[in-house]
Image (cartoon, one colour):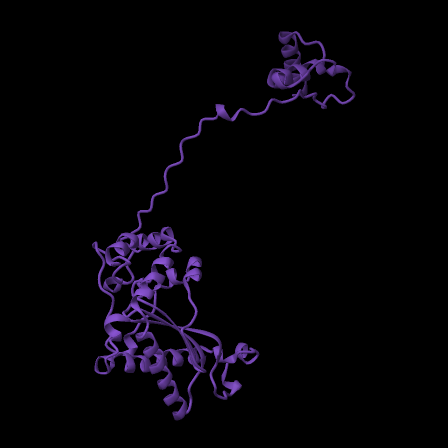
Length: 298
């Protein structure tokens, strides 16, 4: 077998006119890599496997044919999660928008669209509170204000919590271990839920009775009310005081001049990021807010 291979190799050398095995190795490599290799003085090198490469030219990307990148398409249908409750001024499916929910009880009072309310630019729209007591502080935004436009009911209430004091001794054994070690155990969700409920109920008692008192809150001051909770009323005396504070803050709101509120709303409008706002309503299948804002703000 070995003799046959040696005979075949000799025949190949004779046909290629090769007299040395090194010449066979070099010739074979030269036929493959000739443009990139400098073969001069290669036979003098100590290691025949040390191939002397020339400086390789950089790759010309212009010679590479690349197909154009297709424009990203979104074929998904977004569901309008708010349905007919999308407020006037922020769009609605079918063109023109629909009316806000008109609550018939305190439990039906809703808040705002979270995705827009927690957008970074809304921090510049928040104003100082106009009323403060030991239970809460209140900031009010009239119906022409951007924050009121993105509300889901008319009126709307947002309840925030900062160092909230539940004002009640709680058995820590009944709390999760995570809250037992917390410096603020009263951030427990049950406490927050109770505070929201009591604010809305007391608010509605005063707000829904304004027609008899002549405050006209429903007609002129149906915007957004943001409460900053501080302390929860426990005793019957504290609940009476809490209700009194609600009456005082709403009376203060009813005495605000509409013209001044609208001027502040116009200034706030300049700080609104309309790109983020319109993008959100396009996503949920609603009309852009900006055109409806101009249509409904008079």
